[in-house]
Length: 102
Image (cartoon, rainbow, N blue to C red; front, side, top):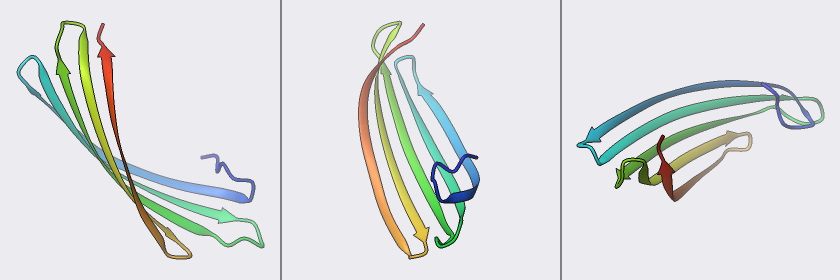
């Protein structure tokens, strides 16, 4: 996979995930997604190699209020670790949208 960095010579990536969706009648459905991503970056000297792991959980809710139109709500939480140096952080976001189904 392309590294996206000028000093990175090799980037190895592993991704795994699970996704589940459940309908609750005609109008409402929900989905849960869980993902893991591991990136290993090999850099040219004088820069040192590093790795990054991220764990993501996402929740999707959709309410279909007309035959072709739905209101959607998405929540995403991500926990990221990076070494060296040992660094960790979290990020989350919420989005509200409208879907046109055809």
